[in-house]
Image (cartoon, rainbow, N blue to C red):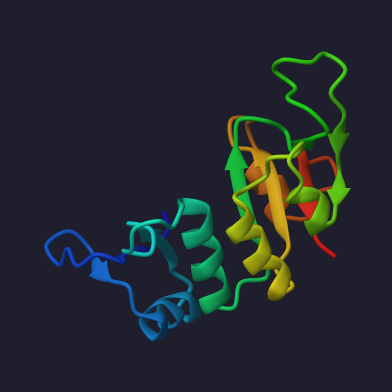
Amino acid sequence: GLDVRVQSAIKMEAICETFIVGRANRHLEKGRVVIFAAGTGNPFFTTDTAATLRAIEIGSDMIIKATKVDGVYDKDPHKFENATLLKELNYELAMSDDIKVMDDTAIALAKDNSLPILVCNMFKDGNLLKIIQGDESAFCSIVKN
């Protein structure tokens, strides 16, 4: 039931629009959901970095990194039963070797632009909706200053 546009960093006019910041912002102003595809269109950039770059370009309030765990843990929760969920952490901890939130370039970009990163489980029913609605019972972690 949502009006959606897909924009790609690589020209594919038969499939979707080419990414243009102004056009993306106009879609958002009209209440449309914009999906950014094909990364940055440049080699050596991860999807995390591309997502962070696009979020900065359109003036997002935060990045939501939807993944298969409830948030950021002090160690891999699939390997260690005593892993602890970190509800909030700073960018420096997120870039440490023990914690793998996103690649360091993406985190550094987010830090330089004061863009919070929210990490959540996309497979928990209703979790994304709870996050968007600001529900405190949502399963997630937030990376910020």
